[in-house]
Image 1 (cartoon, rainbow over the protein chains, first blue to last red):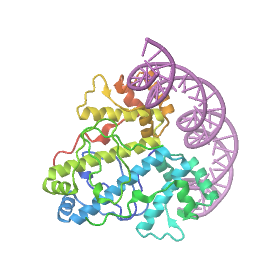
Image 2: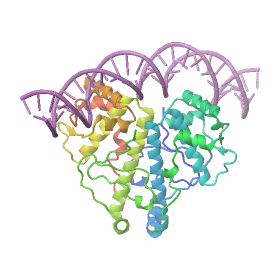
Image 3: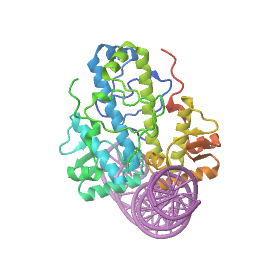
Length: 174
Length: 174
DNA sequence: CGTCACGTTGAACATTCTCAACCCGAGTGG
DNA sequence: CCACTCGGGTTGAGAATGTTCAACGTGACG
C-alpha cells in the first residue's frame, strides 16, 4: 500500500535541490516512456546565480508545486471521494492543457485505476464505483487511458475546483 | 470547514518567495502571541545572492517543509485515524525538541481539539475518541494544552513514524 | 487457448460522521 | 456570592461513507 504524492507531466521539474540532503524521503517512477534531463548540483548552482530569470522561473515552479501539494492535502482532508476524484481530474486536465497536450476531445491519461486510487487515498474498488457515478452523472468519462470531459461546468462544480492554486496568472515583472 | 496545512514553530519560515505570485492560495494565522519578522523581496534577493550559505540553509528548510507536506499527504491517504494522530504528535514533539522547546516532562502544545481535527481531516468528535484511545493505551496524553509522551516507543510504533523526512542528519558540506 | 493485468460488481463489515446531549472551568454582571 | 454564558471537551446512537473479500468480465498478447 503506497501513497502517490504527485503526477509529473512533460516539462515538470522535481527535486531541484535534493542533492543537499543526506537521504531521499520519497522516490520517483516513470509510468510511461519518458525523456529525463538531469542537472548536476554545480550546473544548478551556476545557473541559479548567473541567470536570475531562470532562478525566478524555478522558484515559481516550486511555488506551484507547493500549492498543488496543499490542494492535495485539502482534497484528502476535506473532500468526499467523488469531489476528490473530480478535483484531481480537473487539475490534470488543466495542467495538460497548460503545457499544450492535445485535449480535444480527450486528454491522454495513462493511469490505471489502481494508480489513481493510490494517489487519492482510496481503494481501487471504491474508485471504480466513483468513476461509474461520475460517468452516469454525465460529467466525465475515464476509459482506455483517456479522460473525456463531457460537462466541464458540472465537473468543476462537483469538485469545488478553483484553479487559483495553479497560478496561471503570474505577477507582472516587478 | 477548513483544512489546516501546517503548523509553524518558532524559527520556521513561511512563503519565502511568495511575492512572485499574483495571488495567495492560502492564508496564515497565529494561534499564540507571536514575534514575526518580515523580509522584503529586495532584501531576500540580496541575501540569497550574497550569502550562499544562507541560501543553502533556506533551500534545506524548504526541502524539509516539502517532506513534511508529503508526510501529511501520506497520513491522510494511508493511515487510520489513530495512526494519523500519533504521527502528528511524533512530528510535533520531535520538531519541538529540535528547536529546543522544553519537552520534559511535557511539551506545550496550545492546540484545541478542533484545530487538531481540522489539520488531520477528521471531526473533533472523532479526534476526541481517538485521543481517549491513545490515553488508555498508555502511549500519550494530551490535555490542558500540553502533550505528555508516556511511552515513546509505543507511540512511534502506533504511528509507524520514521523521522527521516525531517532530515535532521544533513549531508556534510560538499 | 491460456494467461494476465485490469476493470466491474455484490454483500458484509468497519470506520467515521452527524446530531444531540451533557460536563466543566473561567470569566462576568447582578 | 450566585447565576449565566461561553468555549472547549466527552459521550451515545444512528446514518453515511468506504473497505474487504470474493467472484466474474474483458481485451491483449504469447
